[in-house]
Length: 512
Image 1 (cartoon, helix red, strand yellow):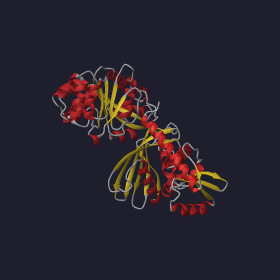
Image 2 (cartoon, rainbow, N blue to C red):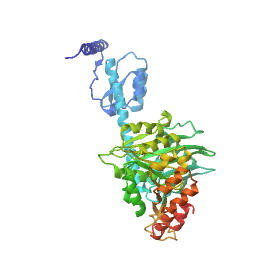
Image 3 (cartoon, one colour):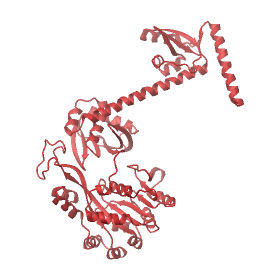
Image 4 (spheres, helix red, strand yellow):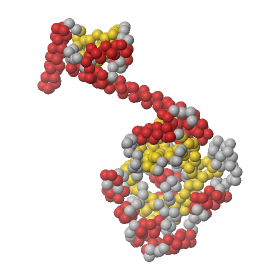
């Protein structure tokens, strides 16, 4: 049974239609009730929603060259002029019918449906266009040759498709004096792709800002944003940074493939000795495992691979990240928000109350985070985190400088991993000394893909004694070698002997 309000509403609607029908007879015009009336899209789209709203009239049926329109107000002064102009433009005639105000508002809402369908069709067309570009650009030459041919609206699609197909981690668009340079970061090294015109640059900049919801009218302040795109078979998450420079706004787009397969730990390319230490450390019930290195050294990939190995139904894993780069089924992932004062430290305080077995903290940046992470690691939690240091041994002085308690530090660290990524020798070229410009696999660089070189430091009692007395970095470095740690340079040279990389590449990355 309907409630009273429902019955009253039904009565009012019935009365409204009865009154409208009576008015139509009095005016000698046709009456129409549009509620649930199926108006064809091609008929309704003869008018825009604004035109219909302003003039209080909308098309609902087309018979031959005559279009029937409906209005709740036959006395609207603008209708006749509007219909006369519209009819002359479209070469059609119009007839009018009367409808209720409710019926007309229903008709106005149908315009929104048409617009939504139009947007969906446009998006599908854009997705097809992106897919088409993904099938066209496979080499640096493909991109540089196509850039001169595409329209400004197509250019961002071409640039993104090229970046995905070439496994670029970042796209750089850099205005300079009289030119704009497009570069990709491939295997950790920036490569020139092409120069683009100032007109193309402005169009790309505007589109990137629109996609990432940045302010178009601000050009003298840095802005950060993000957007998602479908490129071929891949969905990519694009992190955007815009920076004002002397010649315009420089744009950097970081590419994250959302459907990237997580590598197994044994697929990363670690040496057997390091793998043994890692496997022992991650199976401990508690303790702190640190991964150190600069941005882009593969720390995130390593930690995700470890978490993927530990991810089991009987284990509760929580990560605190900035940002969440890859979503892992079965793991609770939370993202810090500095604007809302949701920091690594505040998130970690909450996470330890969630009864986790394993915690991953994206980065230890301050005293509070270091202190909470250390206490969590000695109270039954296995904690993973990262630091920006050049070597494994340097992690200790960094934490001591954050006022970490030496006695806590000495008793909690299971393992410290330091790593860099070196480029692998191109398997097509198979030549350490000579670049092959014709090689499409590596683009003539002689390298394709990357692999890690690492240090794996497991503290001993002697090493922990140095922590307690706050030894110098040099003392930590010396002791690490004495207890058997292989340095990154030594690990790299082992990989040179195996034919995986070159000595020049190892020296470039380790600066030795």
